Picture 1 (tube, rainbow, N blue to C red):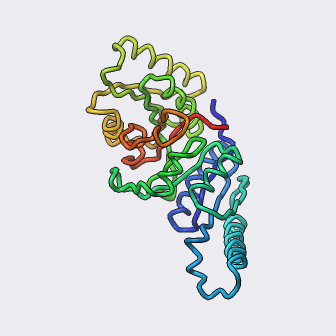
Picture 2: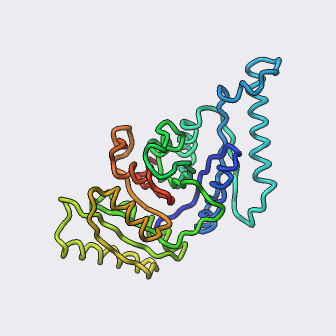
Picture 3: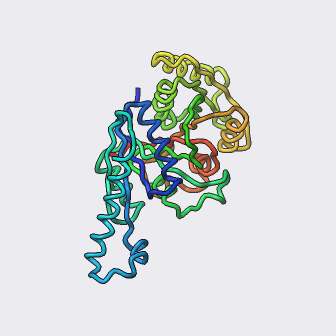
Length: 283
């Protein structure tokens, strides 16, 4: 079973990121993970707020860094974490680059990011930090749209096209279902490459057996038809009250692996429930 030892959650101290922090805390408790809170200060973006500063640029950078450090420390010290192991990381630079850098250097198991989308691709800003981190992170990313105070994961959906790559995400889905005592659903959206039904049932049976062996007893499987995989997944989620989608992406990195038309990116941009994106870890 997948071991989730560390969760990296970026924060800008906004109410939105505070809600994301609560989601991350929930996951950390479920898996007994270390929670790593990261704040990235982009000097070029915040310098205008210090127009009254009379010192050098270097001294201003130090002032901004110190204030951010105080905020991170205050966030950790003033909160009751009830035994959860939490560390703070404060760093300067471009948010996207630094989040990815920290994830690589710390060999993070999951980066948790909140999004503000409203459920369709046009509402998802392609230049957003979350989207770019999803495309370039060296590890799985848990994307949470419009986070709420509580994270309730009573139904986990694993989507598969029966490729070897899609199976890579299965142990993650099983782990979440086990830790949250959730129902696990295995979904295949039929297309021209779908095997005959006997083969599909054999593969479903093998996946169910693997989940049962890990202690997940409530496992169901289904095959549906739709005009494309992303539509099928969204329609299934809307009708069945899914709490978490677990899906694998293809390839090991690079822009060409994450073009907008791909099923994975389309699912993330349209989803109103958390999506755990699994990729091959780069370390």
